[in-house]
Image (cartoon, rainbow, N blue to C red; front, side, top):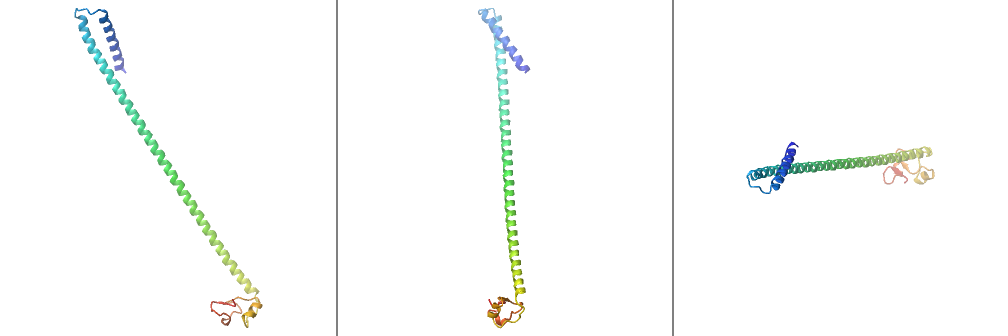
Length: 172
């Protein structure tokens, strides 16, 4: 700032000197021509200093613009990274939810299967309990008429002679 002020003062001095020399009308006594050379030297110095100051300011502006661009790039990269991380978290959460839903569906299917097995076992037990106490059937017609058919191996009334294919179920 001090250099700029000095340059302005020097420029003002130069302008005043030029005005004086112009007003003198080209007096040839040597004083004004000597002063003019000094003035031109000072003018050149002032112009050089002003040019250097302009270059310095331009360089500072360029550096500031580069820094701003670099910061903008960094912010954009950070934003993109954060968005990607959020997308990955959302994807992982979605997959976890899908897996949990799949596991729940499997658990429900298994529970239904177990319930069906239990119902079948209960039905067999009811049949066994409802079957007449008769433990011998002459043939399958007699077993059907008694409401005991089909007879399962281990069940009262079952015997291998009534089980034609030997699969453990008689009077099918």
